[in-house]
Image (cartoon, rainbow, N blue to C red):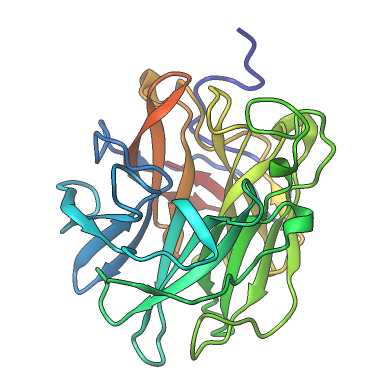
Length: 331
């Protein structure tokens, strides 16, 4: 089988003016933090406890897990569902939830993706609110991002910019859902799948205060039919914005985690020349690692990987600690 990049990648290099590339070690767990289906995980720390949320699994729209330390001792909260009631605009599974807490009032905002009922296949991004981290979150009646002509939207992730104090939302324009063949669409490269960002109202987190900007789009030669799952961080010691994302189809062995960097939040972003995480990495333990969420300071990463190579029916949750030195991200 042909692989478009080396199977073991511990460090990624890129070209960016004024940055150099020495090696720096990060860490990853020796085994899955959750050894059951917990895909597209996102996390938030509240009162010295870490909370993780995942794509629909079992009969729960949004499962929750907790840990006192992030690196170990993760426990799924039984049958608890963070989003037990869905908004009328969507039916079926919920994809790739992400969460933030508004500094102004302590309100928790859960962003999620669901299939727009009228479309049958295109996703839109919604938002739900709760006064407690475990919910139940109450969904807003209308989607937050839903351009069905472009393919819809998926994989929303919030980011508080520590420089300006602005709350942003990032997401993928889901052009690959418009067709084009292949295991997840767009094999003919006929559609764009850009990662976009827009500022949110800091008082509500459920409406925008400005237009969307494209941060990055796929390179068909290196990214396959799509890029997705954006997660933005700011590494303060080097004044560097780091955009993490996945490329290729999630249900293939080529699915991976990459990153790009910029001196400005709106870009331009320069992609690393090699992925951060790939199938076969870390002694063969990882299989299709992607759907990652990174802490705002670029210190922690959470992602899923297939239990069996090429089989996305069980995507286990992994955690790791990142290191950044002169623009190089390692795990």
